[in-house]
Length: 394
Ligand code: PMP
Image (cartoon, rainbow, N blue to C red; front, side, top):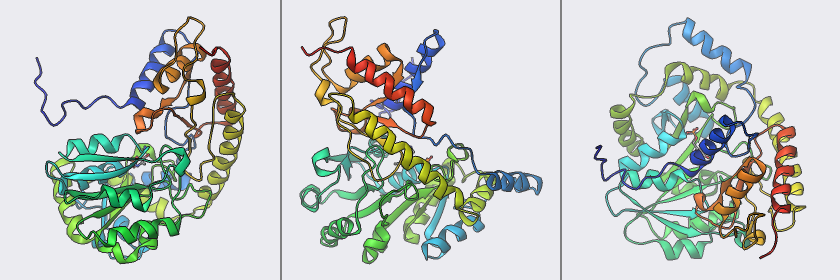
């Protein structure tokens, strides 16, 4: 019998993974299942990026890199941000940047303030590092955004980090420059709190985007910016992300990374240099494509009685409320009590995989990713419509 460490005790399989696996099982048993559950662009990695990887392999860029990253990539990221390369760490995806950051800074009992709904991995990564998440409920009525008053009330002497994500996964909410500055004014009064700003969707934004560093430059000496190539450059499998922060923090994270991975893949880093310094036309084209998909999905979902879908300003997710159908009955008489019941019904009755809002810390909603072909989105919305039409008020 395996005795698991207390560190991972209670760490569940991510609900997003669980849904995808349930969909795969149904598919394997012959069911027609469509998944709109994954946060991954359907576009291919741009050709000039793939070519850079091929060249890197041919030219022998196949050895260990410096732990904190390939110098050319650190420099490219640093130049774009207007900092020196010592402020940059390259890791195996933005996910590892966050993991390094928490492992390097959290002690048991330390608190991380997180506006929710948010990406579900934040909760588990904080727990893995021994910290505690302080979740702040930011509902649809607040545009899924935290207010300065909420932040002020949440800060304690144990608060180490405020973790922001704009544009947000799962809501697509985007903080304006004024909203960030108002949060910054609170943070100025609490110099022990550092700010982690996860901006991985910055280039997939349909409203003006402001980086936390731009909005609050006076807080740069305690700000960590997280980004990477996964989403904007359709490079999820290459596993390259980076953090931009004061060198003291970068050094501490490099110490962690040195013992865990020794750094990111050399070939993928060479490809990321091409992505960051190369032609960006595909970014604009794909943003336009995502915006058209968003508009289609929002309209189609709002046409379904009981579903209420706010218009997201960024990323490639919608986060509608399903509160209007909770309490309703399925044809076999089951009453749908929760968002998870609703998503279970949609999967079982219509073969559509979507993720319950509770996975992101806000029940009563679900997340649907529109990083899929238009034909899949049309089929998905039709399936959702059928699944809702099956229900009767209790
Ligand atoms: N942050 C957010 C908000 C995300 O949604 C994701 C991917 N789902 C990541 C970070 C991690 O991205 P990466 O592929 O670079 O690890």
